Image 1 (cartoon, helix red, strand yellow):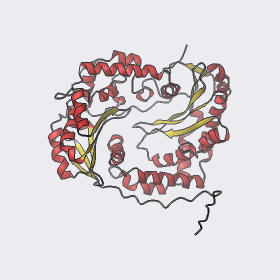
Image 2 (tube, helix red, strand yellow):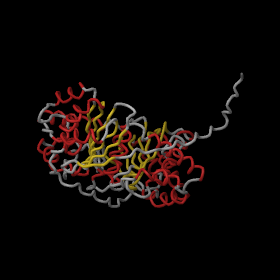
Image 3 (cartoon, helix red, strand yellow):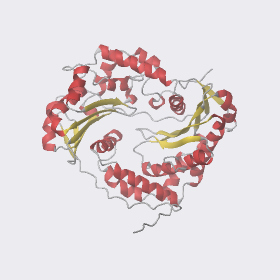
Image 4 (tube, helix red, strand yellow):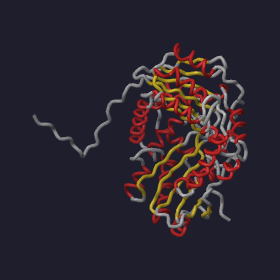
Length: 459
């Protein structure tokens, strides 16, 4: 028996698209008003419990950036019944994991446990979420750890470039222009009372949605949640809306990194919020432009020109318009040319949109990715978090594939024309100024403004 050799000169065709059956969501409320969403998935004896809260860095008090994310980090640092070590040991004894983290728009708590240990694990999760005491020694330990991290970031060109980029494309008073981790000065000035006050003001059932996914039933889990979290007092203020970004004049900015072997480049502009009706066309567009290995940007700058090991683009969808961003590390000698090629690729889709072949390839890739994003309890919980956080309708995912399949070339071109005008984009580079400044000046986009590692102008 002989087997025919495949013709490697022809790209294999795509596999048939998988059918996607979204799991039903059971919705309820505890006696204190806490919304609970439950998804049953009995493939394995595993459960994910996640809390999504409207208390991200957007809520940082003026002059105290980093408060929200440090508060989230401290939730499992000690409760009324357990100190940090005892809480950690209790969770580990169950073979579970418990994490809390803060971001720009929200804070998140996640418990991963076996369904047979739910009765012991959920109370520990609830205790950390609703009864933290923020011990002074743990506050000081994490505050110093945060300061060390911020100092270390100054030695990472990628972090420096991204921080400076966000600061330059948003107004000085806008939360998105600030590092959610804070600054050395803001973290150094924080006190334990700042954390206690932030928690009292912003944490509670009115600002939280609890999502439970896995080997559970509503009848089994709701009484457990009621006993564990039903008495959490509804004291937190409702989350306010973040301000709309004001327009900021674009520019070319350079952070000097003497002797740096590569240049970190960031190009972009504030673009779209997560709840925009353009979310799907923008996602299709980005996959073509810079969202996959075979994208226009990567094939040009990596494959044809050899300027980089990889360059990509993304829309960062937030409560208010987040950035469209092209990023990568590039050869020093080619820094100016690389920035110019990025702007040229953006300009091409801005003026002409994409082709029918690119549309179909991008759309099929997104459909396949969508199917894979609802396989595990963790993935389902992560997908559902976006609904309450960004005010999306409960049935948002039910019609997602239909909308994706109906995206047209005109839809994509419209987004590109409205959002991706390269004339409004800023270019931020962290690199050796003695070798790259002239190339950036040759872009013809005005003077090159020098910045410090924190993104502030160097006078």
